Image (cartoon, rainbow, N blue to C red):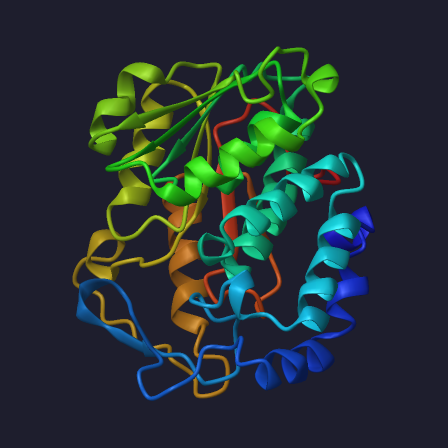
Length: 306
C-alpha cells in the first residue's frame, strides 16, 4: 500500500538491511540487556536486539549525517503537504529531547495508512470528526487535523504531554494558514484530559475513533464505543491479552525468528471479533506492533484499492 504512494520512503530507508546497519551503528535499535516486550496477561515477548527502532532515541542523539537523512525522509514522505515536514523540523529544533525518532517515523507511516482509509470511505460516509484516544504525543492526530482541516480532531489522554504542545506549537508556527482556512492553523484541534470512557459523548455516526498502540482493554473499549454509535474506527493494537479475546485458550506462537506470530494471530482474532473491513501493516523495522485494523465504514473495502 505504501509503495503506491511513492512518498520518498525509499530515499531514507534504502532497503531494510542498509537501514538496520545504519541504525545499529547509531544505536537507534532496541538494544541492551532488557529488550523484552511485556504483552497482555503477563506474557513476555522477547524482542531481539537491532530488530526495530529504539523507542528512546531522540533527535538530540543523532549525528549531523543521520539528522540530515531523517530530514530527507520527512520531506520525501510529506509530498502532499511539504510544510508538514517543516513543522516536525521546527518541533525538533525547539525541543529535540521531545522528538523521538521512532515516534516520528511510526506516526507518519501510520498517518499515511489511515489517510488512505478515510479518503476511501469519504464518498460513502461523512466523517467530520476524528477522536484520537490515548494519543500520547499526539502527532498522528495533529497530522490528521492538518490534512483534513474541515474536520475537528479531539485528542484525549489522562494528561496532556509536553511533546503534544511542542508539536502543536510547531504546526501553528510553520503550517500554511491559507491552506487550512483558519486564522490559527490548528484551530480544529482540541485536547481532553480524562478517562477514555468519558469520550463516549463526543462520538457520533460521523466520527472516526482512532486508537494507536492502545494496550490491553483500551482497544476493545474504543472499538465498542465506536460501534455503539455507528462510527468508523481505526486501531493499531499494542498489547493484546489472550484472555480478553480467547478465554480458556492457550496461545503459544512465539517462533524464534520473528517472534511476531502471537501478535499477528491476535490481530486476526480482533479483526474477526469486530468485523474489521481493512487490515494493513507498516514496515516492521519501525515497530513490531505494526498492524492497523479499521472498520465501521459503509463501504465495501474488500475489493477496493485501499
